[in-house]
Image (cartoon, rainbow, N blue to C red; front, top):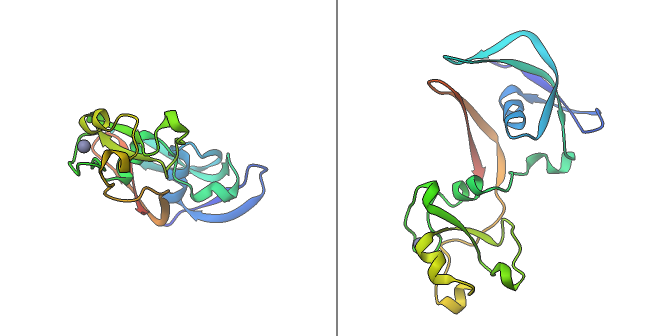
Length: 167
Ligand SMILES: [Zn+2]
């Protein structure tokens, strides 16, 4: 399918023509709203169907267009579900956010200061920096970027989104 979607900025000014997959990602990640649908094009999975957008309007500025939303799941995904201190892999519900520079000491909640951390390491680290604790991070945390290559997969009963990031 090679359907194209017109992307508008927040003030309805046309920015560019994008691929329908990218359009779906923007819509499902709450970064854009549908202004107009294709009247007769639908994406179907077993139990649901979606009308394909024809025109999308971004909520934010175009500058932020390629930004990956900062949230727990995306931080864990960026860090590949590995505790950045002990290097063990955990399930999402067993992981926590760790402020590298502790919050109590002014450390921001940002891509650059938050890492994936298991409960055990988080308790051990407490309000210390990795240096004070004598541990080093697996990888220096930074903000991930979307790549133009994004894939949409229709799974058994629901629509799920997959993306590739440059990390
Ligand atoms: Zn750990």
